[in-house]
Length: 355
Image (cartoon, rainbow, N blue to C red; front, side, top):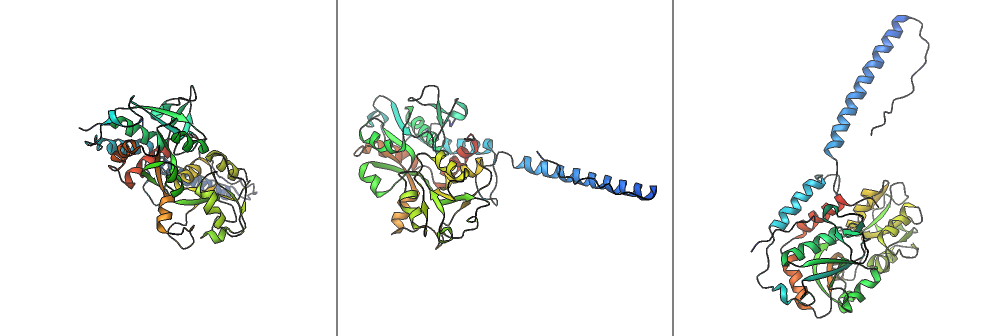
């Protein structure tokens, strides 16, 4: 049986000041007027060319300048195509999945960690009401993945907002059925909860300002001596930033927006985060630059490739021992690949409101 899952999911003219040079003859004056008119016509033609070029690039998704730029509508069409290819797993009985016997899947997330999840004031683009915040709605990559899983199994989706540090205890105690909240699949976390996934693969990067002395850094060694922060309770703050020589660590930020604000307001020289968060920050804040050292000797180091993978792999937390829910989620996620996840994430970035 195939089930379709909806994811509802100026140019300022830079003309120079007119010269007021005195002319000696009317002939010379006319010749200058003709030259000025020619320049005006050329400037207008160039402006038109730029307008059409920018129009073609409107509503860009995140990505490198060499990549094809797609609008939000184009990305939405690709997301719908991915969803249309998903099927209801034959080996999963939704009625017997632990914690969802009532047909309601309660998912916790910060609702403040764009582009994974954010809060908005209406239900546009498929946003879901936040049960713990009347009149507010959640959207983002995590909401889209949650909705896909629920629609496949015919479950109702309930979104609860939670502080980052309360996510894992909330699942452990059974307050939430699962956390879909941009959590890395670390060994420490998996001692506390079981995890489905990955449902995204996120390189670790640094973000600085384009005019920073660190803007041309080619490795973490080039960031030596800078002031930095990251979000609390993350591998970025606890393990990555301390690898930078002579780094001056500021207190960790409680939320991703606070982390980004510490950079845009000049409190720190750079921040450490993952590529989706960085891409969204650059999209919504002029003058920021991503430094991605992945795949080079100058990247953040881990003891083993397995340790690197567990910090790049993003997973879904469920209560320890809840194999039925973990397996049900994996049965959906395994039908998608990294390209599918990237497409959905790019759509989330494209519709993310400026915050």
